[in-house]
Length: 68
Image (cartoon, rainbow, N blue to C red; front, side, top):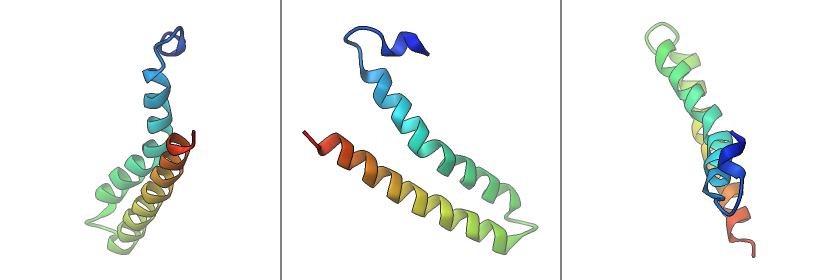
């Protein structure tokens, strides 16, 4: 993991931040899809939480990237 952060190659840092910001939302969506047939209401709640988490996290990431 540290190889991505060494030297002038900082693209790995952006990938790491994106993984932290989008990872939980993707996991919540996968769990929601797995529960969709048996527990429809729980799956719906998980999908909504995943979407809200994505919107908030991308907004925070965009604000961090825009700040000069």
